[in-house]
Length: 95
Image (tube, rainbow, N blue to C red; front, side, top):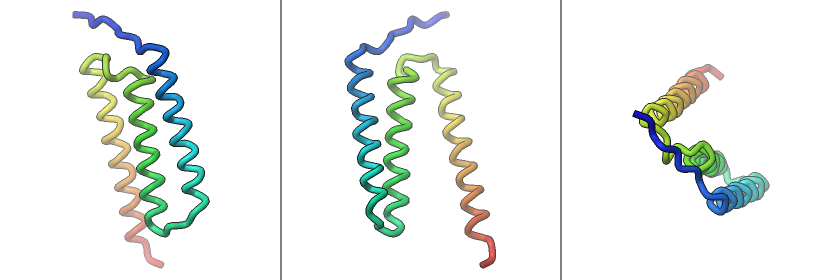
């Protein structure tokens, strides 16, 4: 069974591109201020929002097949595993 592709409208893509530029501006401005550990959290939150926008709208995961969505989720889970392993190595190293 094949699924019919539903391309996103140009206005939707332009609005999301503008949202990505706004998030880019926010991340650049946030990098100018030093908020301690909150700076890292804010940067990762903005990056996650940008990744979701790119995945859902530009990669058109909304209208893709379940297998494609599963592969996208598996990629995100693998990225989380890699971050956790890197963080555990960093935390457990001696000074």
